[in-house]
Image 1 (spheres, rainbow, N blue to C red):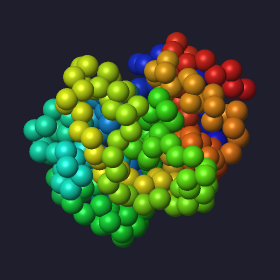
Image 2: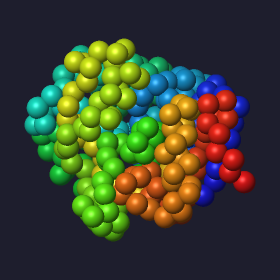
Image 3: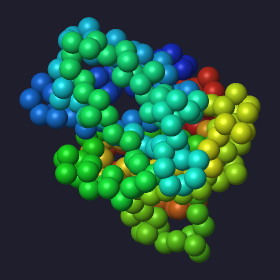
Length: 261
């Protein structure tokens, strides 16, 4: 585990973009496909801008890049929101990253994957068949969730069972709806769908590398709780990352004070 405090959002974005760029380039320079797990939200906006610029500058062979997003929203729990929905993660990724790739680099639409609320069970086998995730980019919810794996009590589910959760469709917690209303929906709760297909804990934890970025003051409490707990607990889903063999946390000291040595 590596914990890296940085000055501010701009620095966090540059550090994160460099980590991902280096991983992608090492992978594709060997002539193999690189499987990159992606996250969304305000945390990642500048990172994606810098990542696209870096890849474009070196004319990377993006035909060898496959991306696997953590989530996609659903209005009814049975199908994905339309691509033109204001909060569609398909829309977000195309606007924030994929459209910024130089078309000459060969990134393929069919290599951009999202969990499908109509068939969530297909996602984990597809990731495994592709060789597993080389790197998974993550944020952390204000209640400690990663992806939309929401906190659960240990009398509801065992530590082992929570860590083995697969990709699935689930209703969003009221706390997450409130958070997303404020952070991504401009204060309009009606825009936030009540369901999402989310990558499970199992494929996230199976990634070769996990990179967690944090830059909101509200993320201080769950991060402190996770460090204090010192073990995985379903009540703090991100706590499972502390046991990952190659986990890196990058956080901004202008918003988050952890006092980690």
